[in-house]
Length: 216
Image 1 (cartoon, helix red, strand yellow):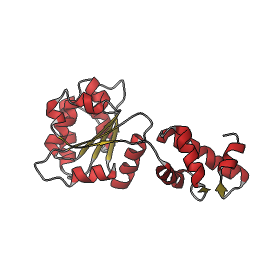
Image 2 (spheres, one colour):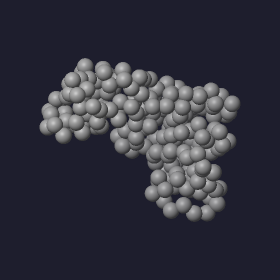
Image 3 (cartoon, helix red, strand yellow):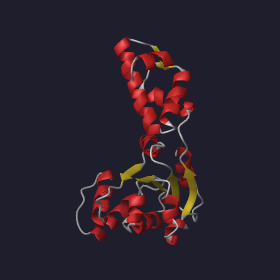
Image 4 (cartoon, helix red, strand yellow):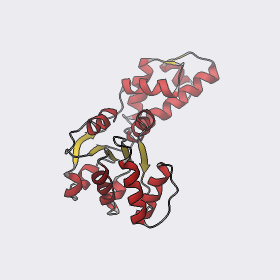
């Protein structure tokens, strides 16, 4: 995700300004998005199932620290004006599939086109195919990145965030990843259990045997 953001941010002036990050549920797209939001000061919008165009604009203005008011048109102009003054600040739109399903994806295109901001669309594995029905949006995608299953190395990075100060044995990381079938969400859940186990037993290092005996 970080590389994708940087690629779109550093594009030539007239190049397409959308990035696409898609993949199966549980493959860590939202985790990566949240990390990028914190590290890169990105604007982060998570689209909800019940949203209307107005809801999208309200959420965007609130993320910008503004008080939403006025018509949809007025709010869109305000968003465009604010983004235009903060050139280079990336926008992450999570669950972007829902914008397509609700025929609201053109709002994202307007924002990107009128501000030149890097916009990363994040969604499920069908996002790439769904977007192809909207040529004016699909043609503005500079880079498409598919989220991959979590591996032991990724799990180790997660362990550093979820269970800081605890040495999670590499064999246990392998075990957890295999058990989770590569789902980042399930790996994270397992690591929370490892963290709780280590605290309850006062362990500095957790092995597969500890994990199995702990009944987690």
